[in-house]
Image (cartoon, rainbow, N blue to C red; front, side, top):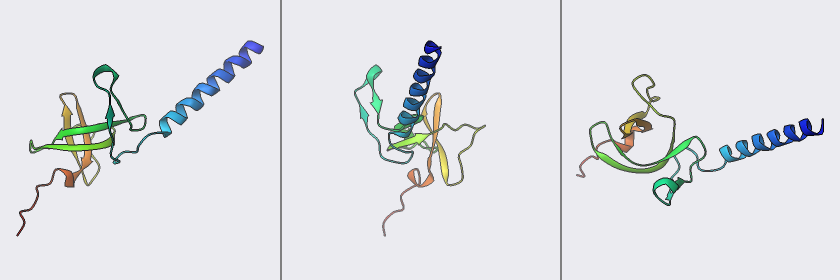
Amino acid sequence: MVQVRRHRVMLSAFGLLLIVMSCSGKNPGEPCTWRDSGFTAKHDCRMGSFCLRSVSCPDGKPVDYGRCVSGQCSPDRPCPPGQVCVRYSENASYCIPEPVCAEKKPSS
């Protein structure tokens, strides 16, 4: 009986830790930074999000983005209105606001 109670307490503590970890960090759209590199690289976006440094826009233009993103897009999972699907790597694409990839208008 004591062992079952201890097991439940440990599971509850683990669940609480997961909730706290998923709520800490920056939200999608907020500026983000990376620490370290390679295998030990970490970013400051919340759990389930990714710090998107640079992307290739649909027209092939490279853009430095530097913001947290959440969820990937594909032909089967398009972006919501006002966002565009940009390629990060061969296997990953993310939604970012359309104006990021928009051409700059020449100044007059």
